[in-house]
Image (cartoon, rainbow, N blue to C red; front, side, top):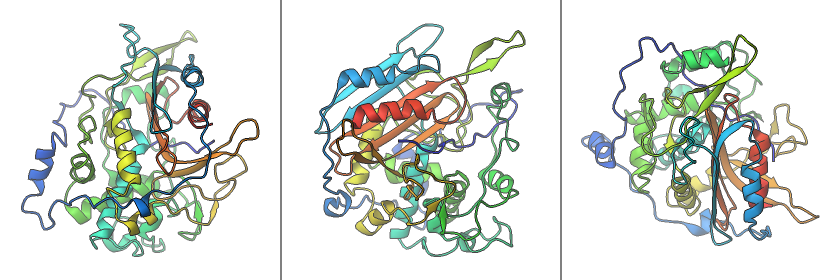
Length: 420
């Protein structure tokens, strides 16, 4: 499987003086619930599970789980990563493995239950919240986002339906390398600064749109989800991180998952993130960038919590049947500059915050279709995938030293080992 980069553009700025660390935006479920007391809308209750609507019985034949292949897969990029963690769950097999070290100084091993930054996996949580708001009749997917955020986009833009934000067909442009620090030394220097989502959108819309008619093509990007997060904040009156906490993290008891707003730390056990910075002598050195501003796509979780989230999502515990259908609908449009090496082979392959892909089988065996999401930020790359019937689920994280963006060679290696 191949995929476009899932990088969520980082908010960057100089660390001198280093900002005082703020408390977590979501300290606990009690904190999240207290904030909404007296609000116009009560804290939502998770809908009852709708397995008939949410879980599709897959005909894909799953091979027997191969622990040796999985261990070889996570150890397959020793020069590009410092540590790897992977977990396979489900009735078709269980396995957990690690590789490398959590800290290059102490040489401590990667903790099996360690936390990591989610990057663009945060998009799946945002999509879920938006779909919950549609079930509450507070957001209409067919209405233009300009109805909810009238002053955000340029006046000459066409109507951008909310649905197109979620399924990557909005036609909104993306930030470029010139908009934010992107070289290794600049990333290190500017990793603590905070740019509001509105500022990121304002920078992005200075660039040409990738196509003219919203909904007619698909291309992966972050700008649509910046806007979707702002939509959540406008409709609810709370930060999107707080809405994720009260609507998803608290009902599912995801105690190892947090949605910080500006706190740069990772609490609890975790592998450190590093970036390789070129040196004047032609060499390079690893710089610890574990602490960084988390605002855009900065959720933190574990493989165990991601597994719980996947099970709840695909069992219909978070979304009613109509919203589950929306979640799993891949638009029938072309992918911008798509080709035979893409999961969609030239056609769209993203739904509302999820990727649909087929992992090719070996030795002439049929491929296995999976749904999930990849994510990446500086020092961390991760993902979660499942067969539609939840027979086999995968969650992984690794620590690349090459900067932002998914190392798709290693991602593909882990996916093939888990599902093929």
